[in-house]
Amino acid sequence: MEEEFVNDINYLDQHFLIDKSIINAFIDASNLRIDENVVEIGPGKGEISDTIARRVNHLTCIEIDRNLEPFINVLKDKHSNVDVIYGSALSVFIPECDKIISALPYSITEPFIEKLLRCDFKEAILIVGKRFADNVIEKKLNKLALLTNSFFRVEKIMDIAPDAFDPMPRVMSSMIRLIPIKREELNLNFRKFIIRELFFYRDRKLKNNLMEALIEFVKLHDKKMTKKESKSIIEGYNLPKEMLNKRIENLSNEEYEILYNVLK
Image 1 (cartoon, rainbow, N blue to C red):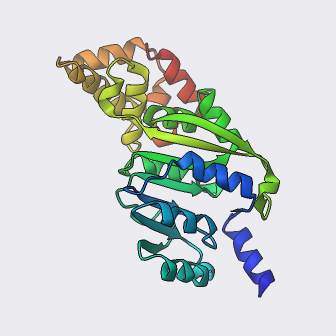
Image 2: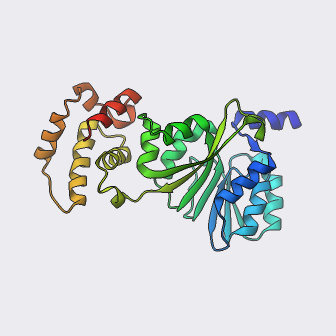
């Protein structure tokens, strides 16, 4: 049974935080308050959840692995302010909350960050792969780093060695904080505003999406731009026609870098 449980964990890309000092740092970084509503994604056996539940108004746990239900039932019996949603964090509804706390399976980092764009929360404290964290902090010009930096202020709290987890991941991890950026806060940051608008409509072709984004940026300053004027600006960027006809979701990292560099 134990072997089957471990195999399920590996299949789900789950790595449970076991280092007490890192757990304490994780909780301290979350700055939990008694009036807050918190969502924890991946409560596991509930060790961290138990501490969170004692410090906040309400805790919603989202867990994909039904094998962990006995542990979570103990948590619910102990704390009346705990609710549980079983399912994937990528598919279930994440309720409005003050904070989201999670040690993410690294394989879902990109789709989870994309999901956060449409969630209503004030702060997220996440454990992610170190490579992703470094790319975001260093503001690399790839899709995921541009996406994250266009929607969130990002702070790296600390790096975490593999032996802080069971089972151990193959890579270093990092603890980060994400604070959502409001759309109107980017009225003086043209590049971030445009990139942000493009990500909201990833199924559109770049040329159409870019035209609408330019119009929206001007509208933010209580001015108007016609589609003709917008098209003229885009022509001045001299982007390849093949690239302009691609959907946003199909652009390569190299094309995102080209796009970023022409947005002045």
